[in-house]
Amino acid sequence: MNDLTQDIAPIPALTMADVVELRLREYLKKKSFRPGDALPKEQELADALGVSRNVVREALSRLRMLGMIDTKKKRGMILTQPDILGSFERVLDPLILGQNTLQDIFELRLVLEMGLADLLYVRKTDKDIEELEAIVNEEVHQIQKPFRVEHEIAFHGKLYQMTGNETFLRFQSMLLPVFEYVVDFEIKASGNAKVGKVTHRDLVQILRTGSAEDFRQGMKEHLSPHFERLAKS
Amino acid sequence: MNDLTQDIAPIPALTMADVVELRLREYLKKKSFRPGDALPKEQELADALGVSRNVVREALSRLRMLGMIDTKKKRGMILTQPDILGSFERVLDPLILGQNTLQDIFELRLVLEMGLADLLYVRKTDKDIEELEAIVNEEVHQIQKPFRVEHEIAFHGKLYQMTGNETFLRFQSMLLPVFEYVVDFEIKASGNAKVGKVTHRDLVQILRTGSAEDFRQGMKEHLSPHFERLAKS
DNA sequence: TAATTTCTTTTGTACTACATAATAAAGGTG
DNA sequence: CACCTTTATTATGTAGTACAAAAGAAATTA
Image (cartoon, rainbow over all chains, first blue to last red; front, side, top):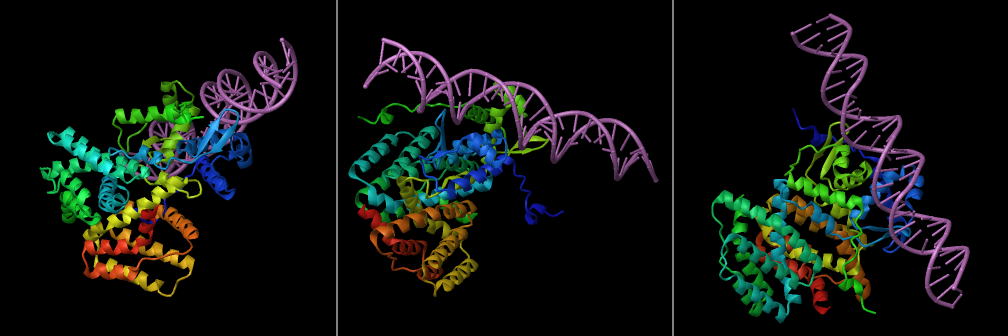
């Protein structure tokens, strides 16, 4: 038996809440609503759409979760600037994601690490480098697993923070658990946890005296075990 | 008058739907639910939580939007693998995002482009390069704005597709509108649309004969106007 | 005029009722 | 006995009503 889902379009099976959510989005777009603007009240929306207030509320609940609207008791609802990563965060759980997706995210973080250099060199300050060095000095005597991971997070997190890009920083911190999960998985499979020849300390030294290109080469070497695994598969 | 919101925590003002959503998440985690597992029925959840079915449905509606659960008429609800980018897509609208966030996303895409090379060189095939060349040949005679953008999307989109990373491809395609928006904005401000010296055709040539490092240098040059703007700000 | 109290309005929550679809069970037919 | 058809059964989807609560708006009073 062939897999029909490949050929035949999956049944939409849209509920009213789905439709209303879509319609509301269209409405907001069409009317060029901007953050701060007030929306019609729930009952008006329900009447206009010809559905129960219940359904409208389910749709609004979704938009509220995304941070797109904010509602106050009497004033009604106003559009707000959504938190673009908030919803992402809710869903990024290694335990419920499929192996393919986990691998994709793993690779995505590798790409981020490799692409980081140029932005980093535009924004980094001496103060940043000092703080980074402090982090490196902390990790010297810690080699056990939980501490190692903690410092890994501290070090790379600091790098992202140095780019001055708040979204970027948050994004990578959300990717990290998945990254660690995949790494753990691969370590269990292959037996040992290899580490690149370039250490965190080396990277700091490059940041001080080297170019963005040098830094990227160093990072590539630092991450080389991961890239080698990619090449093999 | 000082900005109090900096110092004083914003009022939570959680609704029951917010709380139920949280509790459901905790419940799923604690019970180690995996995709495919069936959830209790709405009424049972409502009774257990001591709220109305209405509230439970609002929370479930959110999870359903995120693709975390799927519900069928009699069978009940089952956990599913969420579409991690689906919710992201809903929120990524240049018109409702703040200037800071737009800039952050712009930079994020620059980082992706610069980090792309290594993954690309692991996965690229001759067939891919031929297809990429076909795209480049298409664009030769088109210089007007809408066509230029279209080819820009086609070319860079193909690069991401060549990485074999589906999530990565979708992700960048979602970032693109924001990227274009910011670029347009900056062009209007600075007057003219500069382009790097390295063209798409050059990049294809590098893909054929050069190293990942060569490709990255080419990409840096290709994107150089953007990086120069970053440096100036 | 300013402070206080009383509407008024809109969201938040609860409850009931019924339609609908999909499964399970029962029943009939060869 | 197996297979098909029909009939419950059950959980979700939708509608509608009712009321509490919060927060402005309006009215009242000092």
